[in-house]
Length: 188
Image 1 (tube, one colour):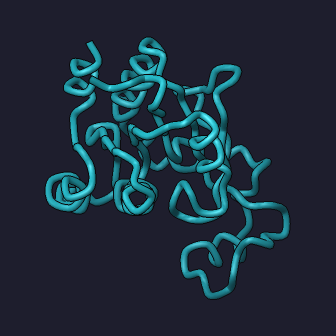
Image 2 (cartoon, helix red, strand yellow):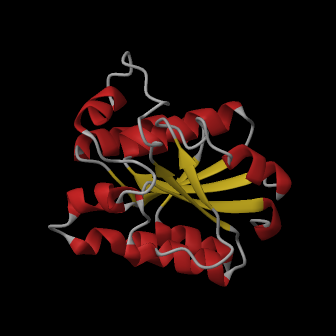
């Protein structure tokens, strides 16, 4: 049985600029909402993670293939609407919103400091995208010796085949992979 006091529900990159890529199907947010409600109901601390940059993009190297494009075109600063947590999963007072400057939720953020302060050992992860923040965070969390659960239907990727391969073949090597429904049942 999961120890809620030693766990954290980490919901990653559900911010306006990323969720909007899936706006043609608002139903895709439902598993995230359901998992978030279950975490809160069972007293599991919730941590939101977003990606954003300071004005002038001091964190972005011109050698960074992904983020140098953002710096050239503008947007995605910590104050932009695109980097704010999506209204459908709005944080409650006291739920931290961690800003990261790379793909992994740990990279350049205070996530690990928060997890240590709360004495967290178990991470429940969900986010957009499976091949981005979820993959990078699973890998780093495993190297940091966290027990990890990935909620596969509360992860999205633009490429369904990449999502399938990661959740069925790659993640199970380092994490328990469950549906939101199975995870909720395990909490009872």
